[in-house]
Length: 392
Ligand code: SF4
Image 1 (cartoon, rainbow, N blue to C red):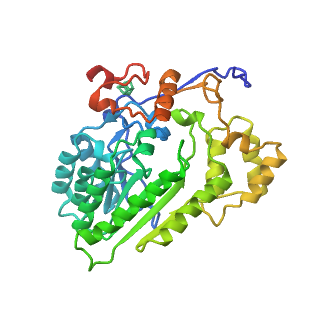
Image 2: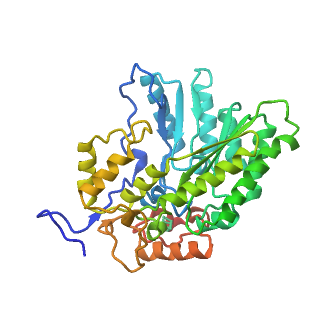
Image 3: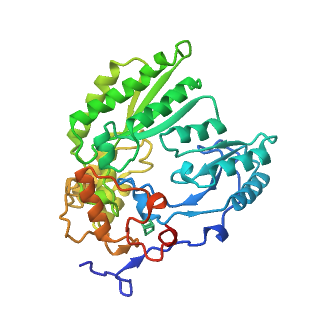
């Protein structure tokens, strides 16, 4: 049982949800910096939540249910944002923008509105399939395209509930190559629950097949490159994988090494990976408890700042901070709690039922998929008063 330390603090904290996104405040007039900034564009949030159910994704669970803005409201917001800020790019943002039900109509409307005003649209977070590629082609036909298969084998994609087949990935990639795209970026995760060396080998085969598409598409005269980016799986609280450990640091490095060696043999592939120690720290804090607060404070006092920039990241300082507070970080990152065990974040009520998360975890281990509740009906996540359940 969680003990309340501060007098008057609630034992249980319920998540607040904006149920009427359509009429909720949205910033449309704000200060625009003079300097170049990393995301130098305006952002239009299409909808909140995601019903895909990828089992590693915390946002997909804690921001349920899906709540969409109407096309007319988005058009009104877009006009107001562009008029007041002067941005020349508008990012149509959400957790999975190709899942917005009015996406084609919205693009039509925005093209009509901004077509002669040199305002460019961008669509981040697209699925790895042909329909998403067609949307990407509408906003930009040049440059690169990004797909996130996340896992190289079908078996592992089923485990994580990434419901996309190899045929669909290859079809989308083939279309990208045929339409003259010169750069395909592929995002994968290593160290996913149940991953074996065979899954990594299949990941390499999949990349090889995508590289080979250029030959079959007869598109050999153009420069062409595939960038493979491999992050490391971080188990997150409030997801079905909260009961899984992260793989050991040495094992992360071994798997990264394996991929590095393999991709060295394939021409036109750039391989990038996330720093193993950084992923380890993420795993410690993603399933941490209140004892880690002292580590954070200590790390800051020792000089840890701006750690997301690799040139500022100093893992030795973090190790010192853990040691000074008597904490063994491995006990957090590599912890496999029992399914009935009370978890340190359970006093935060996201609205989802623990039973649903447990069931999803067990299905993952069996390689069983769960469908999208907006497409084929409620899958029983336990969210009270869910508007989607009432219409599916
Ligand atoms: S309650 Fe059902 S319909 Fe609503 S988000 Fe959960 S699974 Fe989907």
